Image 1 (cartoon, rainbow over the protein chains, first blue to last red):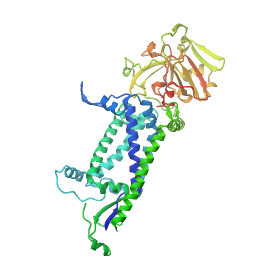
Image 2: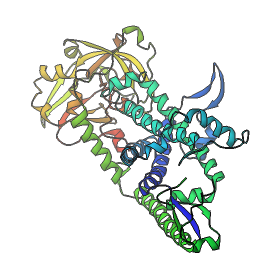
Image 3: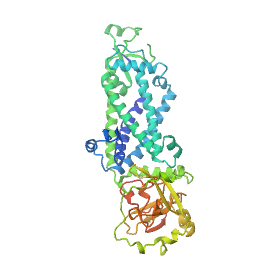
Image 4: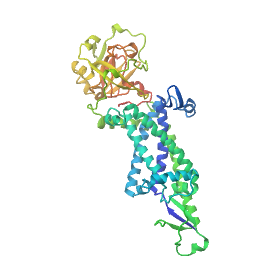
Length: 235
Length: 252
């Protein structure tokens, strides 16, 4: 016998798995667009530490000379990205699920402890509900980043009609830099997310598909009894 | 920690629900891949798969009808912001066999009724200068200084109000190798000019001497260099970059 608990509501699983390919298309088409004016780099003076992006990267992903294609996909899939994201945020509010995701007073301090724990520097985790403090900070940040991508994107897309917005972001060229930076942050989030999902294991991954988490096995004997009052083992 | 949704179930139940959910999950992945393939293999409308083109045209309707306003002005700059060296991007339609002395602007009022206007006649009209951030569809921009005649003044002066009730304006280079179509609302924007000066001097050949379009509410692809003919239409005039897969509207 198994003890299971509902972890992810169906709506959240849909929003999550719709967002994944849509965001992938947005980033890919964004690369096609960025290539036409690929001026960003990390460096100083004539020294470039990292060029966005190296020729080998562009070649490997077949990026060059596809600006028009990139724009057509970007300005179609932006609607899916925006609508899915807004519905997700609405859902968080109306379901009360936001209480489990938004950071609380302790989250900032605790998220540091979680990071130290995950890096095997500290033993033991602070107590948590659905998400630990680091997850709360990360998942809330990524919502804000999504909103930021929409806003900076709109400012680049229609800088004359949304002139004030564009000015608030520091002007057209800054808005483009911000939009690009957010994309880099998204990909960094993605990498950490994948690593954490791999480390967390099958049960955790399964819950994002099935919705439930298996929180423990019950010995055969106990299973025949009424209902156990024993605390589930902490995960 | 107790949870309302906590249940005690058989291992078989867990297995069956897992298999069920993953079956749906993999079906949806397959459907997504199939949908992506379908989308990329649709017949093309001007180099863009039709469903995408339909949404792009919808975007045009949305922004043109509900967001665009002639009161929304492209930011202008003091003259010292203007780049002395103006970036040159593209020479389509600027063939070498151009006879500058014989040039006259042709404005087709209706089939068989064409105005021929000299550069001096255009220069005799009130001049407007604009220093704004010119935006290329490639993603770069540059503050540049242009001078010429407001398109809206030009329409008044040559009694083209009847023509400008039509939805689109088409422009061609003299050799007809570069051509754009622009919605009339945008070309009547107060910052749109028929431009004959750059940085206070006559346009250089590579910037479209003797007359080009400057339309700050559009990407650079619509700022046609060396205007030969202007005409009006209720259907979309052909557009060089639209045919190559870009958005027709290309509005900012």
